[in-house]
Image (cartoon, rainbow, N blue to C red; front, side, top):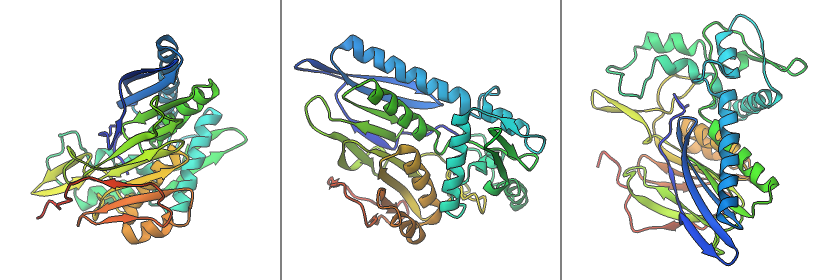
Length: 342
């Protein structure tokens, strides 16, 4: 699972910053929200309208951040964490429902996805401050506070209760996907014909570019993040990527990824990246994170149970694996996936 909300962009969006065609314009803006970069591209009848719509989605994502960020002391999720083992905390129905869906993903994945992973944020640090590998004792102590079944939801009173003192929940794994989905939902309600919301690789798109072409999504080479290994088209779908190359620490010559297996407390191994395509960025992100933890065999078995979603997986050996329902026309560029050990 992710230790913090900061995430290096995993998927590039090939779009022009400003285009004029007929009576429409396409405008782009980059904004830092939820601790990461958001790129907004909106198609509208004129520049003023496009900029107004971008202002709307920025305000919407800021609203969501104020509710669910565990980095903001006054947020509802922070209050839930502050009262772990003490009392239930009343939250907005929106926050309650997001938490409910997160627990559903935990059930679907057998605990490979778990928002209570946040208890590990004091053990594994990927901000440059960690100088030695955590001891087994430290990890064992922290994972005792992890367990989605210790998150108690009361639908009548709209409360969340963390049963164990020291427990924490965090939405670094699906929060940005949820925000991208909500931004898209808002724009569709405003009759915006097309756009793409890119939350540092958690992407929701609708309609087509002003040129009439589908949105083009690039897939990063996980062995060389400066390189785009391929691309595919996206229209009215969402796509997310989780990667062990995004954020990591090297200790005693070993690389440790920021994606942590919540059941063991250790960084995942074996999979370099997972890209998931589907109708919903929140759910796609839950899947992409889970598949990193589950590995290729168990991950593909899970993915094949949900035909609305499909995945592209790259192993640490450079293998490219696709789930049964992978429908995107992936164009592989002239590039090589060379494992770091070679």
